Length: 126
Image (cartoon, rainbow, N blue to C red):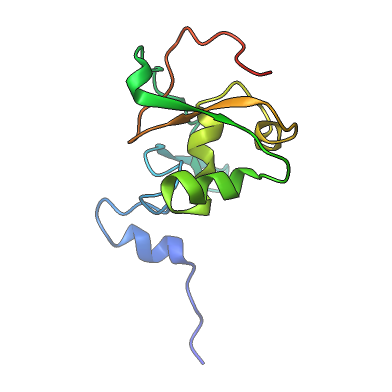
């Protein structure tokens, strides 16, 4: 049986190929190459920086967290895909996505159509 090559090798053969799907938060992140002392190339995803936050309230809506909600459930509710929870996490001042839904009654911001909440949002959590 022939050896199976890693998928990275197949991507190298396709000009412009990216290892992350279009729906991934890392899709637009730049892929870097580190060359080790022995010449081996190691690919890595460079740091992902968030885009500037929108200034108008037309780009977001508020959501009051209910008991039992989770980031993935909110991703499904607002984007039709539970894997899109990261868009809500990016739009709120949290380090851990579980902070979005850890307390019932918290008010979080949900971006609409790829928008992000305004820059002057202050602490909107209850």
